[in-house]
Length: 204
Image 1 (cartoon, rainbow, N blue to C red):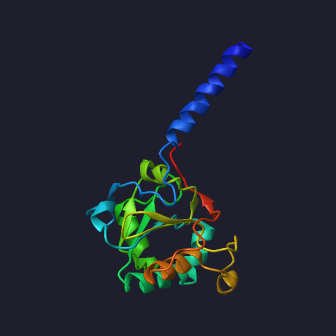
Image 2: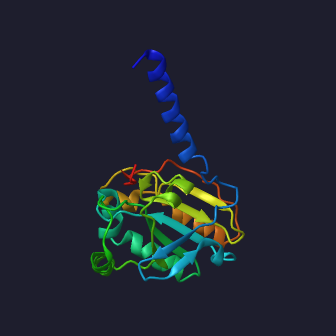
Image 3: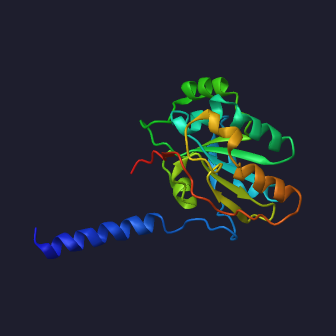
């Protein structure tokens, strides 16, 4: 292969990668609508929840950063607190078939029972389309959507980038902060942050 052909091949690869991530959700813009099947067999569409605050939580139960928040009960506590306040909480797995975080039906039901999650629904995105639409890069990666359908927060769950449970009480929880502001009708001050955790296990 000549140098020209190598450069052309690289340019095509970069173009494909750019195209794959072209439709990424942006803070202060309308959150892209999507439809996914959940672990309960039902189909959920984001636009069905217009008029409610919605949290999107990218999850992979095999990831130590996710384990930090589930083994401590922190994630379930957040889910319960805010769903009790009328917030819709959608946990999304974009793990591809055969990759960490992907479960077949019976194994998934057993895992969800073990985790005692208090989400509204656990959504399945094995082809990664919704994950890439939102630019989900890590587990966890968190998004908050306003009742008007606008994306108002995107980023990490908190400000301490570790897998250590002991760091949870010391951290500023950006998701709780964003929801408290939203529910109080106050403008969010921290609208974005760098997500941290394991990479989302996309097919490619």
